[in-house]
Length: 126
Image (tube, rainbow, N blue to C red; front, side, top):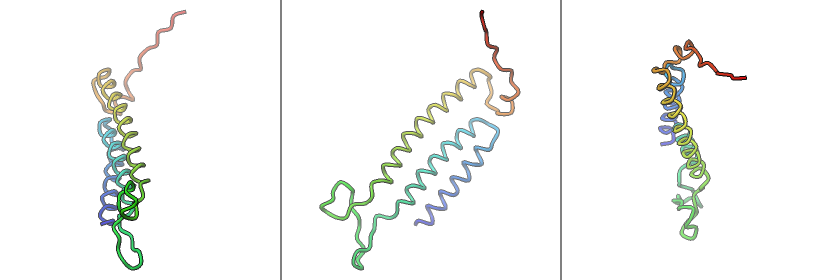
C-alpha cells in the first residue's frame, strides 16, 4: 500500500512540474495546486500505518484523543496536513484573484505574450 501511495505522489509531482513549466498561467496555477496536494499526500504516506507490533502481536493504534482504549497514533502528520491545507487554500485564492485581474487587464493569460505587453505608465505629478 505504501508503494502505491509513493507512486501516486511521484505521478502527482511529475504532472505538477510539467504544468508549472508550461506557457499558460492557468496551467501554472493548476500545477501549483497539484503540487500542494502531492505534498499533503506525501506527508500522509510518510506518517506510516496505524498498526504496531507489540510483543509479537499486531495492535491497531487508536485515535490520539482516546488514550485509555489503546496506544494512540501520532497526531503530528494530521496537524501538518491540516495546516498545509489552510495555507494552500489561501495561496490558491490569492493566485486565482491575480489570474482574474490579469485576464481583465490584458484579455489573455499566455506568459509569452505577457512578457511582450506594454507596461502601464505611471503618472507622476510634481
